Image (cartoon, rainbow over all chains, first blue to last red; front, side, top):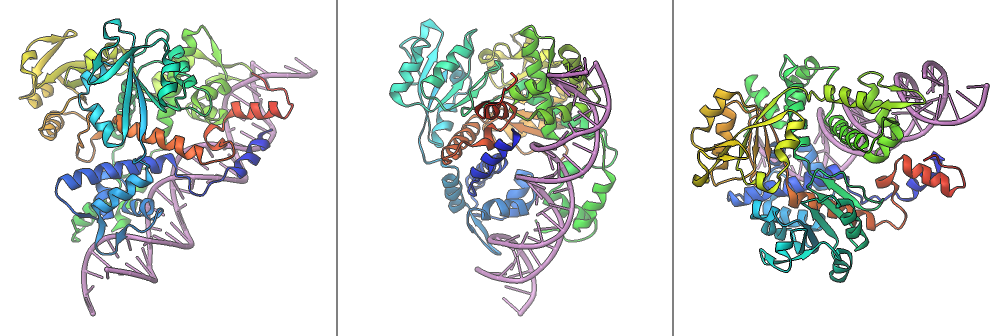
Amino acid sequence: MGSSVSDFNLLSGNESKISERTVDRLRKYLCILDSLEIAGDYTVSSTEIARLAGVKSGLVRKDLCHFGGFGRPSVGYNISYLKKQLRNILKLNEEKHIALIGGKILQFDINLVDRLAVNNCRIDVIFTTDETKYDTDIKQLSCHPIEGISKFIKNIDIQFAIVSECGDDYQTVVDALISGGVKAILNLTQAVIKVPYGIEISNIDIPGELIALSFKCKDKSTHNTINFDIIDNDAVQAEVAHLNGANPNR
Amino acid sequence: MGSSVSDFNLLSGNESKISERTVDRLRKYLCILDSLEIAGDYTVSSTEIARLAGVKSGLVRKDLCHFGGFGRPSVGYNISYLKKQLRNILKLNEEKHIALIGGKILQFDINLVDRLAVNNCRIDVIFTTDETKYDTDIKQLSCHPIEGISKFIKNIDIQFAIVSECGDDYQTVVDALISGGVKAILNLTQAVIKVPYGIEISNIDIPGELIALSFKCKDKSTHNTINFDIIDNDAVQAEVAHLNGANPNR
DNA sequence: TAGATTGTTAATCGATTAACAATC
DNA sequence: TAGATTGTTAATCGATTAACAATC
């Protein structure tokens, strides 16, 4: 019984598969490269990326060299070249079409549309339960009633949905989105949304994030010694070396 | 040099430390228990929790039994009891005091204050750059100018900050927060915030989440076979058993 | 050349899974 | 009692780290 699953696992082996953790790091690196480029830098070492990302430099190099050698020994990585490579690896050049459920978030996060556009994520349509918004535009995006959502998005080929408001019928809305062809949902609400296998869902949960943060703090304060588990990276090594009288390279 | 760090690591060993991944799962379980309780259930099996959390049942049991035996063989877990235990483990009964930078999010996410309160997370004060809001209340929370933030929060013992809007001077604001005693920051803006070692930071990044989601979808569609890596849990095992003619227990 | 930093391997570490005896 | 489900161990798997030869 369990063995059937194992058998399938053997078949589905795919060498080029990138783990979720790696993807998370790669987009962090990309973010860091953006800010370094804005700061006027042209090259960067794995040590510097590691310091800013809070990981070890070896891991940065491993992540990057897995896709080919982007750096030059003793020089580091060319920032604009590495950015281009990362955007390729993360498939950021492919257009992603998004339906937004609830328009209020655009008033709160006024740069959201632009920030998404940088990564070729396009909000194509807004659906709302707010009757006063029907057939009006929010930030030049047309605003439609939730009813008929499935047929609507089927016609314009939408793959993603951001659910930013939930009425009582949120599960019905999500089901309609999925039957309309949506493959992945980003849920910003407190609703516990069920999706069928094969559909991706990611929940952003502010109270939950605070719990995790609070726990990390608590956890740390129970140690009497400095907790290198948490801050153990190259920068610390350099600092320790410094304390030991060695000359840390910055 | 590296060895100094290793030596410290040996000293800081703490058996009771819970990994970040475990904490993330525990709060997911708690969320699931909440929704099951609302649905009227009294007990739940590890298999059911696992199905809803998208993990294997053995992992659920392992996570839970690590803190003591909360369940009864052949019965499962008592939901309200398990909730209480999880709230204890996650230290949700301790009050957490929060400063909110930027008030607009409360207009977008109208339940946020209440959702935080359920976990004893209290927004005590709002800071804003919007002069029209100075000394007014937003949702019964007093609203203050950013200037003098450090002294202000020192007086009222704030440990957390949610940064929901960033002016150009966001790093200065964060530095002031930290010098005022803030130990952890939840960053909802696109700003790349630097914090000193020992201060926790967590970034919520909507475009980044979409990239990750999109990547997972892409990754999956490159397989010809069903990808059990992604949906490999007890429910799938049951389904496979079913396909094989066995009688799956639901 | 000497120094710096990459690419890459083998070793380590930690997290998950499979499996089953114990318990209800 | 028979069936279900927990608690827990040993085995497996995957991710990170240490370390260093190769390269600029």
